[in-house]
Image (cartoon, rainbow, N blue to C red; front, side, top):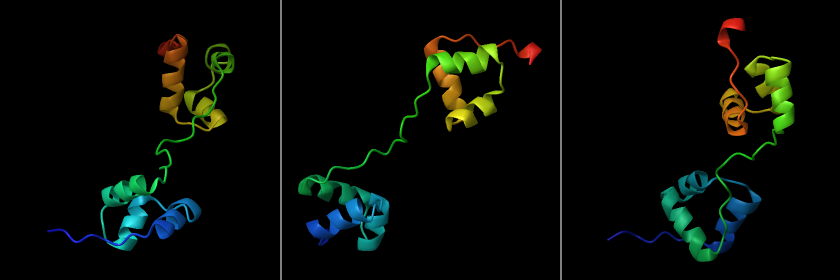
Length: 105
């Protein structure tokens, strides 16, 4: 039978919300799995942070201008918006901006 780990609500709340530690980091401190931390957080009503990166706005008109009109390299456009090259390609497709002809660039 597994031993129940003592994870005080106040300590878990402090480590996660105030110290901004990850569930994996807290699990390492208490010698348990991140799943245990996640489960206990749900019991205590501590809302988990999103594991996703903050979405960055990439306006369609500006992307079209930089990509189609000015024909800037994808890496420069990605740096301009502070995102990855893949994000620029994904957003271009989502906006329906046609791919450039590779033979001319």
